[in-house]
Image (cartoon, rainbow, N blue to C red; front, top):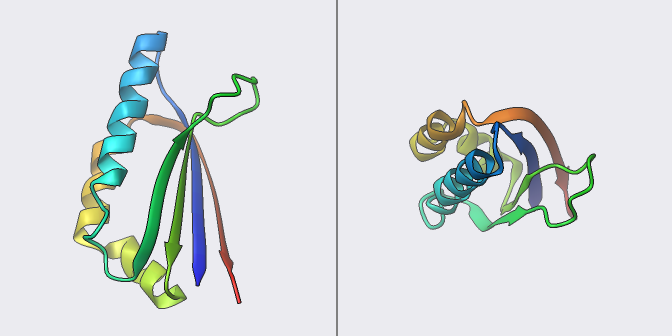
Length: 100
């Protein structure tokens, strides 16, 4: 299994704009459930700590294999989500790792 974790900071001049961006990001990624072969688990979390060094949103996913994660990168539904949320982020961090 491969775990794929992505964290973002979201653009927004006001708390309301930031909240709207976070909501769109969440809806967009959650729409992928059941649409990507090999995607075993998908969860979106929003930071509640409020610390200044925290990311706003985390995407936690599990894929059955590296091949499934690779295919996800070019899957039309994932590309749609990338287009929907592409302008929302001001920072992005990613970690992928295999679980034996």
